[in-house]
Image 1 (cartoon, rainbow, N blue to C red):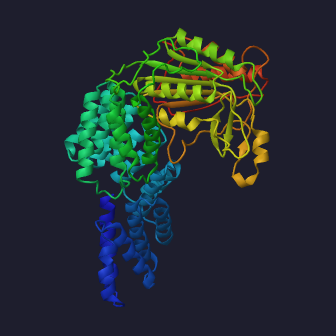
Image 2 (image 1 turned 30 degrees about the vertical axis):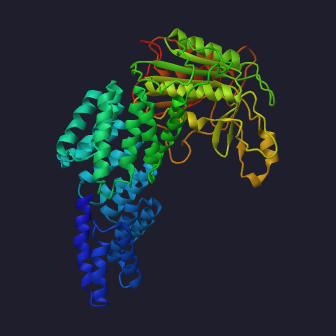
Image 3 (image 1 turned 180 degrees about the horizontal axis):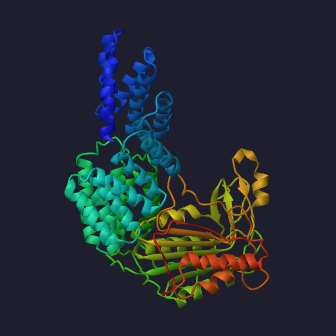
Length: 572
């Protein structure tokens, strides 16, 4: 990016030779068009130049471009896009398209970002910077092969680009090539040992390899570097490096069982202002994990009642008394865990006959192929919340995590909720107070070093339809049939890499409970789960075909995947 800014600096220098208001412009010009000017001073100077109304066309486009650079420093991407768009309208340029594409990338709008980078490459000579930025957008879309191809072009143009080596390494890690990823990240560190970002990414590789001490050491050094000298690159979102560093070190501490230090790091993550989509995703994860490790640190009262759930095949030893903080637990690489819940015996909404049978059938299929299963049937909110939180805490040390839920589910204002058996809506209470937020489960599992498979047979109807309709518009509640497609995890977070989510039917549609002992979806799922050598997405394709056939096209299962390569639940 810096090379493009230098070109525009030369262009901008010619602007201030005009005689009118020469002294004022000579003072304002360098402030507006120098990339080292503090953001507020840069924006103020550009505002004053625009207010002079003496420039047109290409000259005015340059000023809008530099004001966009100022907004970019502040992380205000909507204003970056507005100013870059005006610059493009006045005079299309490679730099303006690149800057706008980068802003769309930071907002998480990867398709639009790629389109802008394509236009930038069409306008000028090949640019390693733009290839690199387009690679980032492909990576955001989980198209890692295209990302690697663009990073290859960026490295060919500039073999000293530490960030291109780093991001190519991230893409290789996403495809399961940990050794290739480590080689690229190490090269990035050799090229620039002062950068914290490659160390943060090496933290994730060490965690994937199960070397938590190295992960923590790299995370600590990255945090030190980021605090000592915050990244000056204007294309780096404010605070994003520090947020990422704390999040990754916290995940390593948690996987090691050092919950006290993990809690400190999660608190640090949440105490920093986030501007970009990636940082908000890290904070969504940190918020859930902080709650989980805080629970783990709290002493368990003597003779505390346990929830009414079916025990896991490998129950953890219970603590009694005011025990100290848990000791470090070793990370068990290769651990495969599943959370299975079936709710049908509803007290206040329509009961469902099959979810308990569905849950037991799926749990058996998973146990048969070696999963450690936590299984619960007909859970009230307290028991369902505890079982879910216990599972999310344990999943910090899992390599594969499967979540399966059968029962009632509802979307409210575009967010999905799972409904415990004691859910009851009362006048004056929040619509969702008695439900379990699906986004919390997704955010708690959002970690690139683990494979997550989430399956919800939870769209059988909308049991809250009458209550939603009677709530009126003054509560700003919107209810609909079925569940919503999970395009986001609450405020700014994204469905993480390494995750597959499947619904029993398409978003917004209603699934059938079935006339036999199981729903059509769960019956097909339990039959195919244990098929040896069947890749998980192929398995879901078979399930989909069977459900479509058995329901005479009334129900079409749906899935969305960001899995990193092929995943086999049953060994080949």
